Image (tube, rainbow, N blue to C red; front, side):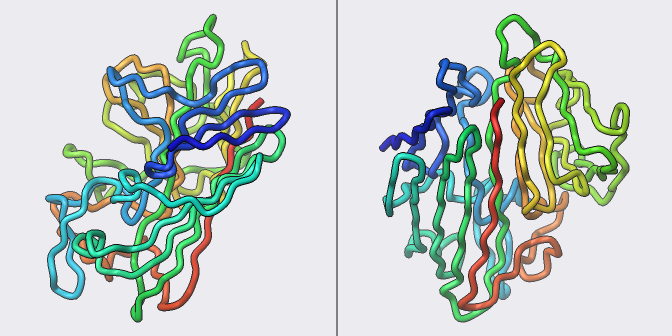
Length: 291
């Protein structure tokens, strides 16, 4: 099912499948969200849980047992239940099932809330651990935005702008697109910008830490821009389809990293996963302001 949120500035469409955004458009009809061309990438904005990225062999261990889990977890392919809706807020949820426990042995309640406020949209994730033991998970978003936003411009007319003074660190990927052991400084033009070009993403995502709290997609030749706040998250991934001329860019707030190359992940010992004690609640949000 598709739900609609609307105010004086924006119209937002959300699918019940994965709670995935389908459209973010302005009152004058400008579409900000990537529309899922299957030639490049057939998604719009998946929500990621309970793992971020790839696992070696699609597997992990917990208490000595091996489990299978697909890339980015199962939330993005799960039908969410309706909780409530107003003109400017939508609440969806899902809980563990026998099927999810075959791949992820925890009891939980996951609630996703989208809230419109003027020209801003906020996505709030709330996870309640209903298990009797600590629950380990990754959490994040994967929204893709149209670049260029103006049809008269090109992808290369845009740049990513970070807050002055940040000194991002990049976690490098292995040849197989898993996490390597290498972390390097990521240089910014004028200490704040990454000029966009397609070849930046020839080796998949650019994964940055210490880059927050915001990043903007903008062009000196356009009045339209996107300001993304990922301050609740440790990492931000920047991605488009590798070795392509795709006209989108994903800004991905991540709480944790994918698996290391060749390492069978032990869920209890992967250092960057969220460890949520029994009975407790974790809440994180990201937001996007559209100019």
